Image (cartoon, rainbow, N blue to C red; front, side, top):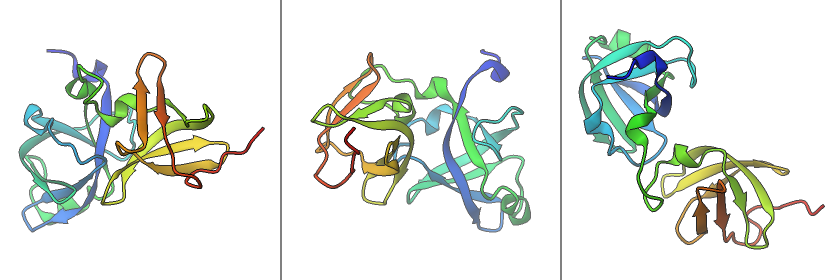
Length: 180
């Protein structure tokens, strides 16, 4: 088995609140996908999204709930302990999230990709992800600042993994790009 300290980890969500009296946690996921859930038996909870010191927790039980998870950890036994976890990031090994094809991928795999509109203008770089409840969003940082763009099939024309670019057909006015 690979050394845990040399693995890379990715934040899949954040502890939103304690759930119940027995120390369960409600974790709001960054994406609606949680198909990796059956592959993990430990998670990391951290104050930082990219921690230096890793604190592992044993996953006793987990189930999908609304736009997140309800998890029971072996080391968290009551509501008081669960409340201390509020706001912490939940990280899992990136090796679990690797995909084999470009039609189905995890969002973190396109983080840092350039977003290009249909006029071949660079909108910016993907720096994060979110959701507005109805659809997934990509957070793009460009000359206009940071903007959330719906990441839906109707807007995506092509994702080029080799060139690290996402080509999109964006409705007029969604993103204002300063002409140079």
